[in-house]
Length: 459
Image: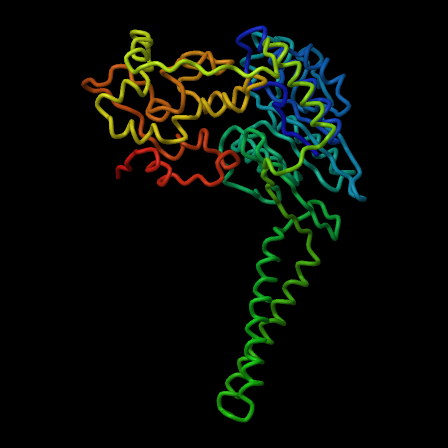
């Protein structure tokens, strides 16, 4: 098990409380990764948010190695962390190299001037050449993005697999020459599993997609079903129609030849090195590991203490306000005006939206997180104006006029509307996918979901 990096932090902290929460989370993460048996974790630029001293301390606490081939000390030109690890797995010697993006140098000039990130190609190439002498398989854990991964695969021969960190982009290439390239969707909704079926140890391994073999096997199964059907027809038609029998017998002969040809091709695949990639969605139905579950339970108790929340006490219902009262609470000159402001001119759309799950989105997490504060990821997608108005920590902090997923979440801030020249953002599939990710919303269908919330689709 390996991680492509940027595991410690998502972004810089806005308060000391957030910083304490992040440190608590790191403690759980380290223990969980140890329990799961991680072999290596690559270092990404976000792992350096609290500086090299903190990262070095975390690395010493961890029972698994943090690696980076191109993060070096500017003075002695040596790597700060181990550039790679090697492991023997089922008789195969595997080398794992870590690499981060060079653009981090712009940040390091101010924060960590004695650090430098080398060009990934220049840094990785000698390690690949060194490991090729003893390793059967070479994996690179990368924070370069897809373009950087492609360049690395093209300029550094000998890499078998690149596991890339997600930057929200969709991967277009799964193989560059002999190098496999994989990355997952963000937010931890999936586990990537790569199976290798190795019958020979060449350098490179020349891996072939297992799906090609599967497609041929399925063809054989389809033909055999047709074959059995014709045989039954011949049995039922014995002596009744000699001409039809002859046609069927010829058909059987053709199918028999085809099956022989396909089985020969399947046998050829059995002499090749094959790979099979599987993306496993992490669903709520998957049973929690008891050890890690206990760690998270302890984290939630400490988090509740940090934010002064009593776990067993339910919050009382809030007193509902009239439309006039909500309108009066909207700050003058604010960028966001709230769906209540849209109601006057767009009553039909407002009424349709009010009956949807979007309108109840903030209430949903309020009910789900009675004993602790919701995570930042929840509040981003269950409120309107998160980050622009304020980075809410509690549901109670969300202004009444911005609760739920409102018009401005999709169309952008409404300041200046209605007015000459005011244009709203067009709601594309990409806008929806910011929150309706495949793991969070597996049944999402762009057009039908738009219609559900009372929006029309313009050509």
